[in-house]
Figure 1 (cartoon, rainbow, N blue to C red):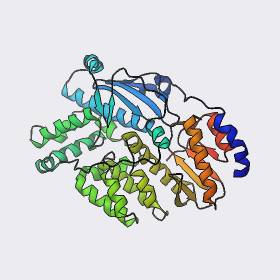
Figure 2 (spheres, rainbow, N blue to C red; figure 1 turned 120 degrees about the horizontal axis):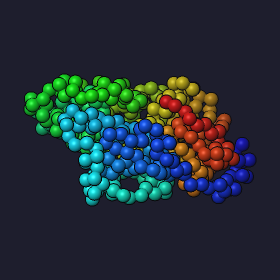
Figure 3 (cartoon, helix red, strand yellow; figure 1 turned 180 degrees about the horizontal axis):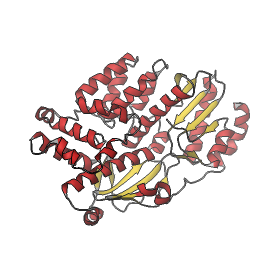
Figure 4 (spheres, one colour; figure 1 turned 45 degrees about the horizontal axis):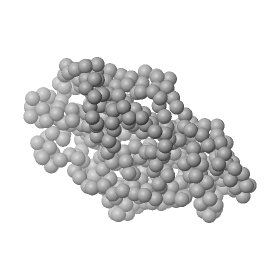
Amino acid sequence: MFATAFLLAGQALGASLEAPTRYDAVQLLGQKAHGVNYRVTSPVTGDGFLRNYYLETAYGNFSVRGDRLLHIRIRELQALAALKQHNGLETFGNGFARAVSAPFEFVGGMLTRPGETLDETANGVGEWFDQIESGMAHPDSNPDGTIASALGVSKVKRTLAYGLGVDPYTDFPPLAGRLTDLAQAGAAGEITVAAALTQVPGTAGLAASGVSTAGNVRALVRDKTAAQLFEMNRNELSRLGISKKTISQFQKNRLFTPQDQTVIATVLKQLGGVANLDRFLARVAQAPNRSVAVFQISRIEHIAAYHRRVQPLRSFVMVKGFPFNRARDGRIIGIFPLDELAWTNTTAQLVRSVTEDLRRVGGFAGAEFRISGSMTPAAARNLEIYGWTPVQHTLP
């Protein structure tokens, strides 16, 4: 099959290259395109893998890579809106002018400037695909903080976050700061957590809208300190046969919050028995930015869903630096939570490189490329030319 595919592949690489789709924010997101304290600007662009969103908010302007991270940010902004309504602070309209005129905001490890235009070149996950061999080490730290833990601030913050349905270790500065302020007041006895939450409109709705596996670990994150989660996750990963070196690299990467790491450890348990988990987690541990970290969490959930619902997976297989999977029927399966796959130059080069490496793997009975979002007709057609079976709109 691949011999025939490569007769046509040279034509596919240079032909039909396209720019990612541009979207109107309202048409794409509907009512989620705006809220009391934010709006998503148009056009929404992409890099051929994930969509790029630009959020204008009462707290500054933020760029967001990918549908999953956008969903998290909107939930966090809804939590802030609920807290502001309770606290009687200024409305979005009053604070918006100041936010737009602010010189810059530092968000999730990325400096964003109001008014900047998001380009459509490879960035975020696209850049990660394009520079697959690079990695980054991240310093270890205690996100709870020794003093905060001793004073009870951490416990109050985790309880507040649980009630609001958000990550207590969020990397979104406006919410992180507000949670800290409320937690300090709660620890000092100035307010009670129960009183604060019962007076916040919409809290129940926020708490009930957990994102995938995160919703199943929220009680653990509420009841255990970051140090306790750290130890619990380390033990669980060790039981799965993952090396101390890989576990250490993973837990030192603070782009994954303690909640994220607990989600990953929980989902990897579902993949117990799949060979080469160590090599897979070592690749996950190299996430260089927050958008890639969120992408990796989503990818683990999609892989576990395939393993449970479609057919069991035998192993992870490294193909040109990417962890693919070998299914029980022998096929190579690539599972990626992409918003939209377009046949850009980066995509074409990636598919060609991976396909060439697959020819050297051997022992497979086909290859399948599965994504959670959509593929452009050109992307689907060219994947088939290279010998892949394209599958889109898969859900975890």
